[in-house]
Length: 142
Image (cartoon, rainbow, N blue to C red; front, side, top):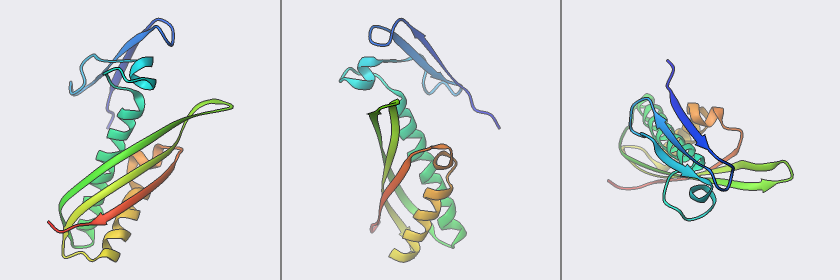
């Protein structure tokens, strides 16, 4: 199953601008530029989109893993913090941190942490990223 997104860019790095769209139409010509990526201008950027993809993929994977272990997630909230840094080779996305809070019927802390680690390791977005992925996972009451 293929999913599609497209990007259009005009101009140089700092003075140019672009748009990004997704097949579903959720993003439709959403603007991005150097200033939305490295400064405070409104608009999206690739790191934000990677974070959104990772947080949503991980949350679904965690729900699946918990279900396979006989638990039902009442709620999973995941925040992905994507770190872009400059190295000798240019810019790198070298770290992503997942901050997870979940309410899960019947799960104890050990079962939840095991499921979260399995989901972190095996969600498709985690697998495609060549970055250090860290996580804080907290089991909370409903």
